[in-house]
Length: 151
Image 1 (cartoon, rainbow, N blue to C red):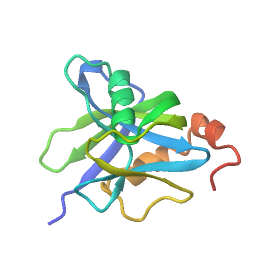
Image 2: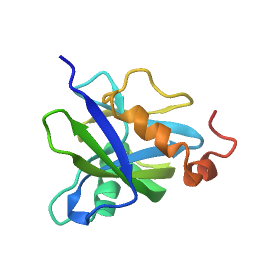
Image 3: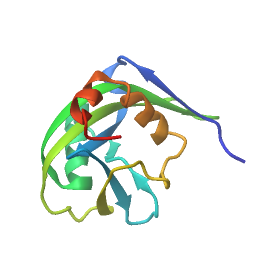
């Protein structure tokens, strides 16, 4: 039986509520996706906030660990929440990243980083990721980064 999942967007919440950072990343006009070693699906860079980190530090750490990005422009866009049936609502910060340079992919959990002109069909979180993309594509920040680059 499928759990019902809802995704909502907020301008802000109490900082202590932010548990995740998710980064929609662009490199030379292409989407940047990660493929986890244990899965055959694609996902945005991102992950859980560690104790003592600011949410921006979480974003920077996860971006490097999962993509090897070393030169980029990172913009916080909004707070999002995920609510699954029978579970408490969890909050994260959604970022937009314009990547300029990578180094070798660190040996963490990601198997590969791919750049795509179109969005993938095999999402790791199909009930969440398309909603985040849909939201971010409407922002002025996204329009600035992708002007004449993405279709």
